[in-house]
Image (tube, rainbow, N blue to C red; front, top):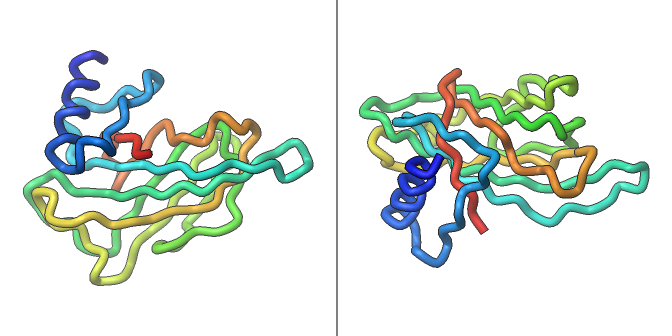
Length: 154
């Protein structure tokens, strides 16, 4: 885990402004040599009043591989805390498995293809419903079935 944290910190410093780099959460196990990077920004979380909570999550996905990923492509975001979602942006909802907290979406617009070698970032996001106010950060993110490394943004 220590080498993964150092790698992600180094990638963050290379790809973003140094002051925007946050230490990755200890709960995450980023895959070594992941072909994609998911930069995640969680927003404020608020109580819905029925014992559940809502929060916005933005994800910027980047292709670290050497081959373009043209549209359409699919993504999966997982956290057992997710009970549902009320909106999704820059993508289409394909499905929500509330028993595992897995959201699947797809991106179809031609300008949202992911260029090889970190050529661009594609933003997707959603307003999630959850069972805990402290537990909205994704546990795993996949693009076309391949797990991405995750970097927390402030």
